[in-house]
Image 1 (cartoon, rainbow, N blue to C red):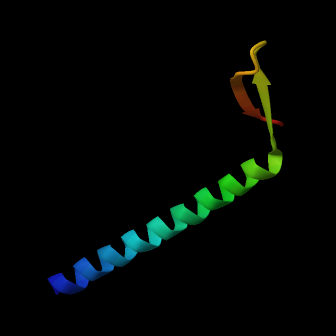
Image 2 (image 1 turned 30 degrees about the horizontal axis):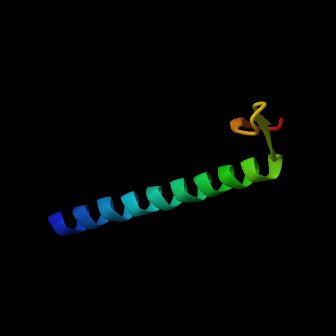
Image 3 (image 1 turned 180 degrees about the horizontal axis):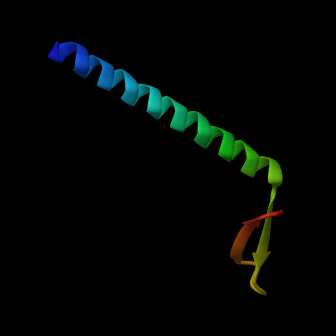
Length: 53
């Protein structure tokens, strides 16, 4: 009985992790599609990059 409960808990954990991975991948895809805008100082050094709305 204990083995079955442990197996169910492990399966739920794996399923939760895979769902979180899919959500994170979707978020990264949306950010890449938005594009980025970077600002540089007078020396040409990178100061800040932000996502375009």
